[in-house]
Amino acid sequence: IAADGSKIILPKSLDVAEEFGTIPIIGNGMNDFYCSALFECYYDVLNHIAIGSILAPGRSYEVNLATQLLDSTHENDLHIYDRHYASYEFLATLTQRHKNYLIRCPYRSFKEINSLVRDTQNWSKVVVLCAPKSQRNAMKEKGLPLEITVRFISVILSTGELEILVTSLMDSSIERQEFRWLYGKRWEIE
Image 1 (tube, helix red, strand yellow):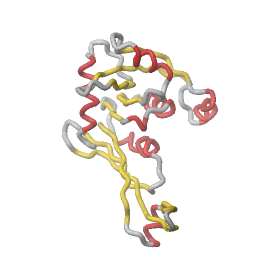
Image 2 (cartoon, one colour):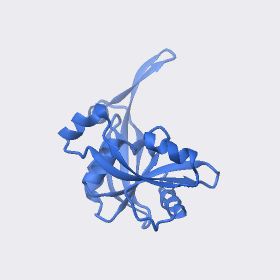
Image 3 (cartoon, one colour):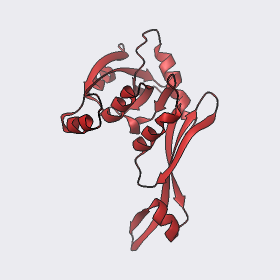
Image 4 (cartoon, one colour):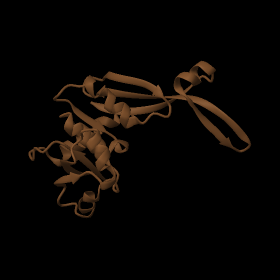
C-alpha cells in the first residue's frame, strides 16, 4: 500500500475558503490568497486501486492524514512511504499499530544512517531507535513507544544513486534487490 499526498488548487470562493482555508500570496506587489486542499491517498500498487483517501484543508500535514488512513488497511499490508514520512513519531505510530512499513529516508533523518551511506558492502542494519529527547514527553502523552527496533537498508538505483530505506521487515532472507523493487512500486503512483 503506497501513500502519497497532492496539493489541489481549488476555486477561489468564500465557501471554499471557509471549508479548506487559504494560502497567502505575498510578493511582487501582490497581496492575495488562493484556496487549496491536500489530497492524501492509500493506493494498492499491486491491484491498482485506491483503498482510502482524505481531502483535507491545504495546510494539513501529510503524515497526520496518513495516520488517519491507517484503519483502511489490513494487518499484513506493507505500507510504502516517501521521505516526507520518515520521522520517529510516525515510525513509532506504525510500530504501535502493528503495521509493516518501508520508508525512504533523507540522509539526515536518523544518525544511524551514516554508516550505511559510507559502507556499501553492509547494506542492512538493525538498530534500536530512541525517541529524541525533545519529543519524549509528546510520545508519552500519545502513548507511543520510546524505543523501537527498525532495519535500515541501502539500495542502489539504476542511476547509481544510493537510497536509504527504513523498514519493519526483519526477515534476513529478503534480498537487497527485493527492497529496491518493493520501494520502486511506490513510484508508479507519482
